[in-house]
Image (cartoon, rainbow, N blue to C red; front, top):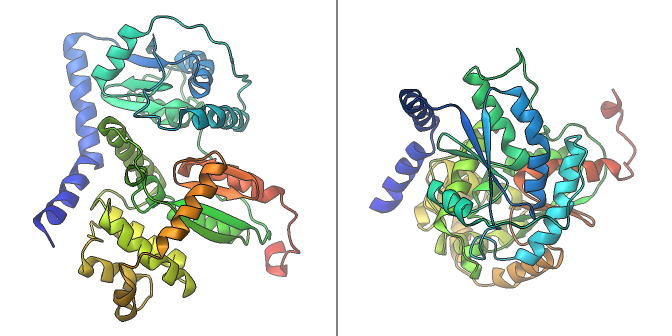
Length: 385
């Protein structure tokens, strides 16, 4: 193991750990009290962004529920480096925001002709605080995106005793998936990347969902954005990894001792995945790779690390090492990526049932809703009990 692959996972584990988070919050509150400042939540609102419009719709009730002040900044859309597929995002965001609103029981309609005003000062404030996106709430050094992450801020404010009511109801609580079961026999397409932290923390839930509905997982691996020439700014990578760690803690998924597999480690993993799939252990290999790289700091760029990944998946390393490094996987990856892009999605993890496609580890409920609408096969007697 190289010095870098030895040290980096330990550093990542500390930076992403709960202790650092708690210490940061305590320091902020001490400094806030010392300065005599009130509890101010800053909202970075882009009126043209459906997610931002949805968050804006629920904020009055949120503000009524807590003894806080919400300061709204009108900002511009994220720049091209942070949103490489803006046209696809424009279409997808409208669909996704509407189905999220429906799931959250929010009476909401998208405004296609929002008022545009000068955003220069607000953009500068957003950049100074360390973000690039809209539909963002900021409080005490932490960012909360849209309706999906509002519950984290509500939890934090409740812990500070700022709720106006004895037992506040969160505006939106992420659904637990799977919540039901059925016999569909459907093909559940999972578009994944070995370099995606969000992919890493969804591995167990996608398997549980497939098992609950008797669905067959189809592994549709694609290259990470940065390895296919799409820019991923540092500020975006920073937010994503912190947000993933937060989600992992909530879901009780091991995460944080990371050995970044970008580059050769990803390619080495993909060179073995079709072989593992033919052995009937494709999912096991994917799960092993994601778990060991993203939570145990295993270096997939070295044979010792890859051997551990292979063997934990129940595969034969003696056979694998002769297959490792082949280029056959590139044709499969290109087809997977083309299929994903043609369906209006450009990032992972994404999931598809028939023509229903969604992006994000926090959108498994969309897939479960689609599965529950399929004509189920006859239930087994044990299922009917």
